[in-house]
Length: 127
Image (cartoon, rainbow, N blue to C red; front, side):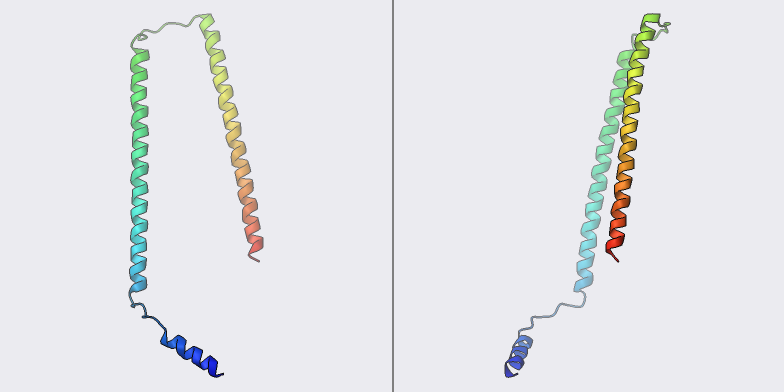
């Protein structure tokens, strides 16, 4: 029993200085400030990247329109041979677009099923 009292007395005498009353609020203010700076930096970075990509796409569109339309300003009826070739070319494009659509739809379906399964498992583990 004497040892317990001696240990308690020693621990009480070893207590360090207490934190000031405004320590928690000051620390939270700093955390919010850092989080706001990070969010603003991410927003500016995203905006710069989006602007760069948009300007690049506009420049490429202007270049392609200037390059391809400079010689072909007159309207010509397509011949039958070029019509068949363009249909097969467009057909292949539609085929690729259809496959892409199917893959995106399957991705969405499997992701939603996985998310639903994950949420159900979290619900059962909380019980």
